[in-house]
Length: 178
Length: 250
Image (cartoon, rainbow over all chains, first blue to last red; front, top):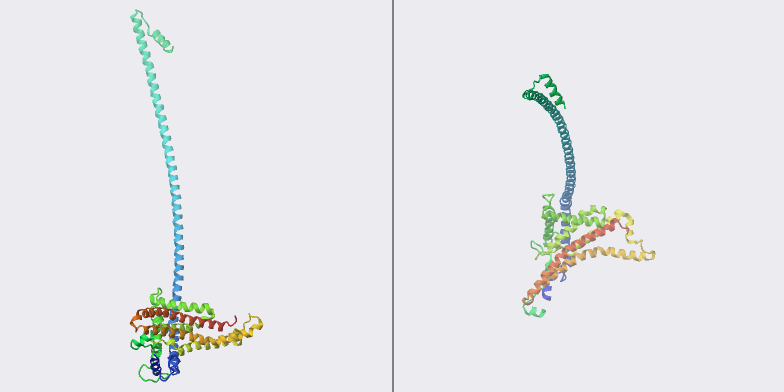
């Protein structure tokens, strides 16, 4: 062990054995290269990397904000479209009700006219029929009178009487009235 | 166990060899400009940062892919940390803090690759980071607040007789900050890696190799956590110090 440690110490060019960290021969070299490294990293970061990442993040933030605004816009449009649709539907419903009411009224009017006309026709037909019946009745009355007169004349002749037309007519008329 | 190991023909532990700084292209002298394994792993850290934050975001997708999500998460994580701890006026120091965070995070994780060199395990590296933060924050405090920055040490909510004593304590703790800041990071990284090496050394003995390997796996998992947490701790403490500089009054 001790020999090994000494060997390591000898490699370190006469430095105290043990920690190479404490060998002052190395300090200048490390400090020089470290400062160069830090400067290079600083310039790479401040000139290239950090502005670029900041721009990416800002752009993303902007995109997200824009997208949210666009989404809200579209949502408002959709709501407006829905409202317009609802209004159109209600309008159409009202229009349909109006048209159906109007149609109903028109049909009712036509129907009334038709019924009236039919009633008038029926009344005319009825009065015509009544007149025909009255005629027929009057006709029947005369015929009966004629038949009665003839029958009365024949009956009187059969009984051996001689009846004059005048007195038979008078008799038949008196009977018919009774 | 050690006797058995020696008997078994040279059980050798070199837990600290991994921290050795070596010149990459020959030569044993390490000058300040020599290209060493430190240079290599620092360069790899730069590449890792570029790979994580620049290459992943090159498409600038509005809907991020996997790589871009990681970059955005890291950005958001550090940004929110800076904003929450220092307030709105600390945001302009965000690139500096992001630099520290990304460097420490990438260096820590690169150090977990087997056979790699852990730059953040060196006190020289973390001391520069720690003292850099310390001086930057102190200078910033005086520039922003002038002499009233010293109010940081004068706890006006304490009873008057206690205040000088508290001021001494506050000043000591203020100057200890960079030391603890840097030693915490280097110590954590170094200790973890050294323990890994020690466990790996025990794996040379067949009888205890399974236990040693399970140990290595367990410690490795722990070290993954430590790597991320130490980067986080370093960064949030930097934010706290920055907050003290911007708003020195309690």
